[in-house]
Image 1 (cartoon, rainbow, N blue to C red):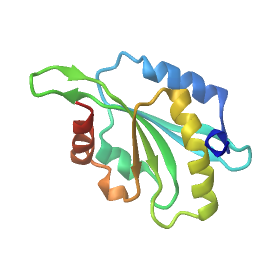
Image 2: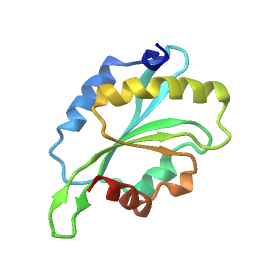
Image 3: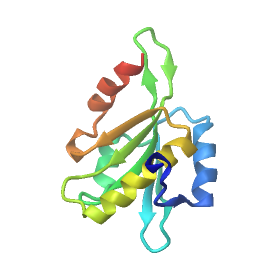
Image 4: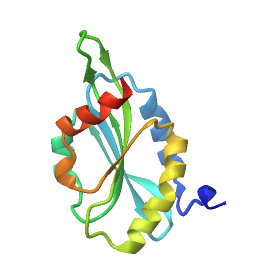
Length: 142
């Protein structure tokens, strides 16, 4: 029963954006940063980025608050092919308030399912969120 618990629901606008993002035709890196609205207990879009590297994205994120990120990454294979894996990052920096961590943790599974994410990563140290880190993680999916 606990596996079906959803603490925060997805905002309808977010659902539409995730669906469009999943089928986007862009060939650059892009991101949707999501947060929990503590008053409404909905997951909402905080910011959208086009042509953004993980290093640039890292600079935009709060250092002590959790976030969810949908990230479309332009991945160059060794044989010259390109693919665009849709990654999901659950950002939980050390020092977050326990209440926030619980709200995010309790909402993650539903968000991953609704968004159709298959490449799901948890990030505890913001300095880890780099292209090198992502390339290492994506090797598992080859």
